[in-house]
Length: 246
Image (cartoon, rainbow, N blue to C red; front, side, top):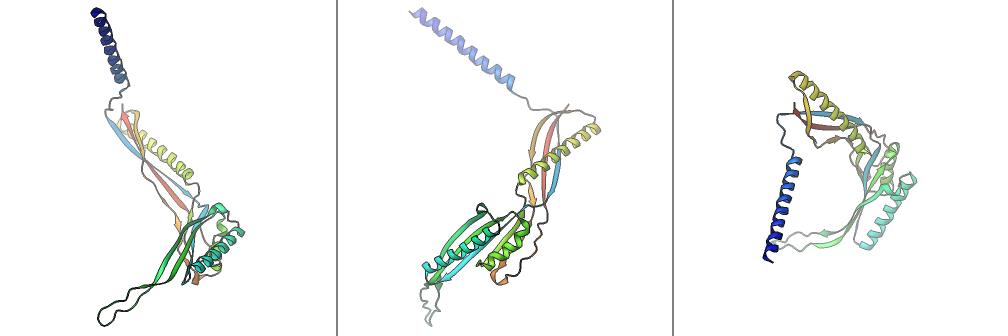
């Protein structure tokens, strides 16, 4: 019985040793040693795109002593503006409520001769509904901005023209940047008298896109629809690539 146990333990030990050896060999075969001499190049790609959508925000602000009446009036104005937008071809998916806030307003009193200051009292409420609008027909942007104010909005602000599918434009700039980096690598290898090995690393710097933005239109400044120019949007991508030197 003891001999059988010894044999079993011996076989288990041999199998365990073989398993460890197998793992070690696989690791050694899969391990990629750190490359020797390397060099790095950077490339830049730039694409200038014409914005195809506009975005702005309008707000409906109501103040007064009766909260229920304020809410009702604010909702009525907001609905009127949204109805106007839809008649101008703006789809429901492009109209989004960003915030709806209710806050109290206070009446403050002067302190008396003895420095006693009466406590401020709530005098009414402030209701504000902010809505963002995406404009896909840019020729209609000025009409929409003036129209929301004429239909009850207190402000129309944060007008920006943007490229809707910005990632597609960024892909174009990225391809140009990589081609630029590869071209530089070839030139460096030719001048330096060495051959390019395999690629060691590649990474992209965080891009910054330059666009056009507008200001704010107050209700008291409402005027006939202005002509708005979307301008252009420059998208720049920088790529850094490292290669082995053969």
